[in-house]
Length: 377
Image 1 (spheres, one colour):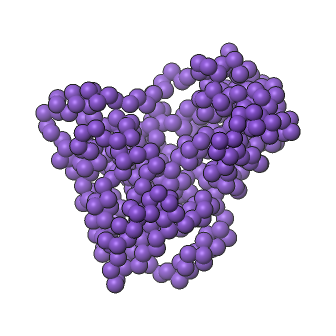
Image 2 (tube, helix red, strand yellow):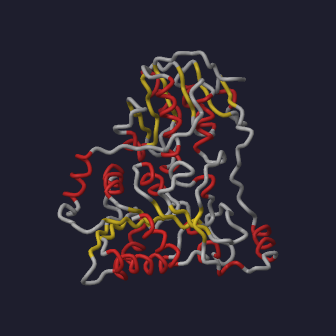
Image 3 (cartoon, one colour):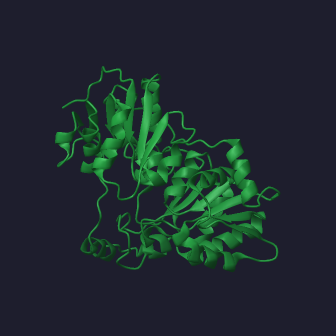
């Protein structure tokens, strides 16, 4: 069934994605939706942890959030007073479609998927050139490594051009809004923070009087260790960059990253260097404000990577188990960013943990990362 292209909804519900990085990648589609329906009231339905992401965003008038473990029936009941004309369901899960159905929203649009089609009034077929992320099996990884006659585990790593490509995830969301006759042309993922938020975060964390350049370091990644450049490489790179730039390192991470961040802080701290350890201390809005403040962010493939790029901060990213062509930061082709990847034949495998020797990230050298950071500051 095709989506209704000629409707003029007054009240639109957008069921947002559940992860920070994915949410940032939906922003081009949301901006195109706003462009198509400039007078509509657009409400974002988002997990509680992402509620504040949408503050000040021009595509969103209002946010409704749901708590971890909150039932689909509770969410549906919460939505009914909104009297929405149309629901745009961005995730592909059955639950996300059922919520809008329970809310009694008359037009419900999303990608066609088994177990949820009945709950949608308009089902959008996948893009013809869409690329699905497929996890490699251990047997496949071992066959690829065995066939790699060059033994490229010692590769120095290469900097990708981040060339424009239609395979990127942002096109999945743009294709969905195009079913409503919105433009499918890509825009940069974009977030907004106010100057007052930046000033407030600087005061709160004692950064008002810093005169040196501020660089960010984000060595964690929620998905798993296969996305994390080794901690000893982060330490070596941060030390070398600090010596050459006299920068102040701001260390970002969640509460689970605190032991890792403490290890890095201890290793790179010296009488000449200034370090601000913010692991587990910032709200989402504070994180956004301080990422905006940074001249560059050295980071794994992670939610903060996407946030920083969407705020205009250049990012340098060693990629391991994931694909920069599919989920890289910013708009594909943006020359501000440096995405590094080794020639490991098994990458991307899309696994949480490496079943062999972690060659994809070990193959990216400290020297190459240092050069990449210095090239953008």
